[in-house]
View 1 (cartoon, rainbow, N blue to C red):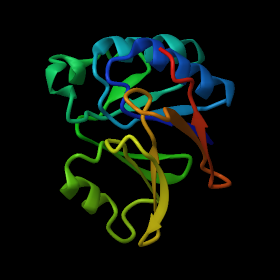
View 2: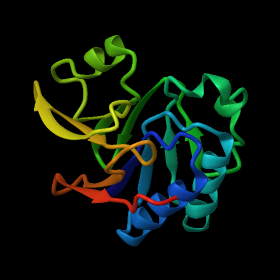
View 3: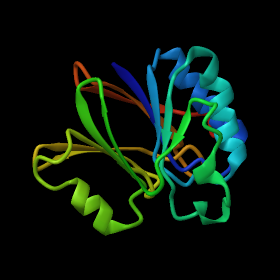
Length: 170
């Protein structure tokens, strides 16, 4: 299974649309948003992009998402599934944690030995890929507010990760 990973959209709908197009072009079968969504319009853009293909979008809240009053109650009629501050999923036979990363205790817990195959995180606005105690931590970088905006695609079967740069304009 191929999954798309993005984070830190900070309400930028135009850049989110660009990120979604890159992920769709690579044939993702599920999408993870690692927080700092920034606005409900970003979620609507993701729903618009992925709904026609029935590609699920799993999202967690970041430190800037406290201003989005209804984000946790995003309509269940879309492919967007909100997980609050922490996502715990099994997809493609892999156990995956999704956490923004601004709450270090949540990140440390997820990285505990044997808990997860993958921990997907954001917050730092820097792409990262490392292993810790048998768990692979992946940060796709930031879609917005980054000198080098990026997203990532992970093949869960082969464990191959690709960081994809995005155009800086928008």
